[in-house]
Every structure is written in structure tokens, then in C-alpha cells.
Amino acid sequence: MLQTVFLRLVRRAGQPDAMEKEESYLRRAAINAALDVLRSRQADRTEELAELPAEGDHPPELREALGRALGQLKPRAAEIFALRFLEGFSNPQIARMLGISQILVAVIVHRTRQQLRKELAPYLGGRP
Image 1 (tube, helix red, strand yellow):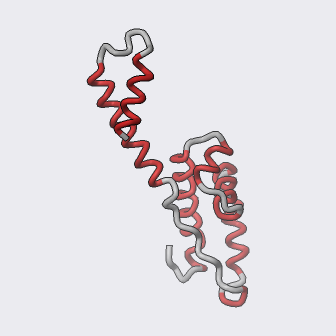
Image 2: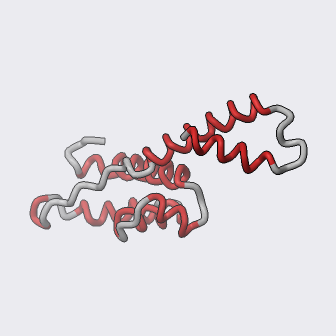
Image 3: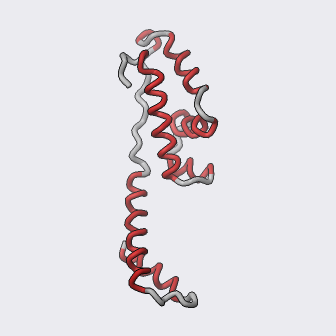
């Protein structure tokens, strides 16, 4: 991380008026580099959806309820959910495909899963 900060400083050194406030730049660059490290560590911490039980192990209405719940999602949320859990892409891959940040992908995945859990709770033993 320290190398990254100093590389950023060296790159910036070639710009006019870039070195006027070296101390504040170094402080901000260190904070940004640390945040980048934290974000990259958290990017792949999502949990996979549990496999649905065999056909006879869950109420027949569950499949219909899941279809309705997926149909009620906003188009962007549905697209990201499908890419993540049906197609198996990672959050960074989805972010690159859609031209959005990994953080936004993670937020949408999290909110979508919460929404689906809430809507399917009656079929999953009342657990939200």
C-alpha cells in the first residue's frame, strides 16, 4: 500500500502546481489506498444462495412465489441478480460488464436478497 501511495505521488509530481500541498496529498492518497484495499477484500464476500430442496421437499407454491418475486424486481436489480446467482458471475465481473462500481453491484445484490427473503418468508418456514 505504501508503494502505491508513493507511486501516485511520483506520477503527480510531473503535473504543474502538483506539489504545493504534499502533506495533505500524501494523507489523502494513503486514505484512498487503504479504502481501495478494504473494498477489494469485501468485493467477494457475498454468500451464495442455498440450493433449493428437491421438488417434493418444498411447497409447490414456492416456485410460483419466487417467479412473482423476481418479476417484481426493478430491471437493473433483476439483471444483476440473474448474472450473480443464475449465471455465476462475480461482483467485479458484473461491475465491468455493466460499467458500474463493484460497491453498487454489492449493494444491489444485498438489497435484492433482502427483498426476496422478505417476500418468500412464508414459504421458507417464516424465516425472513
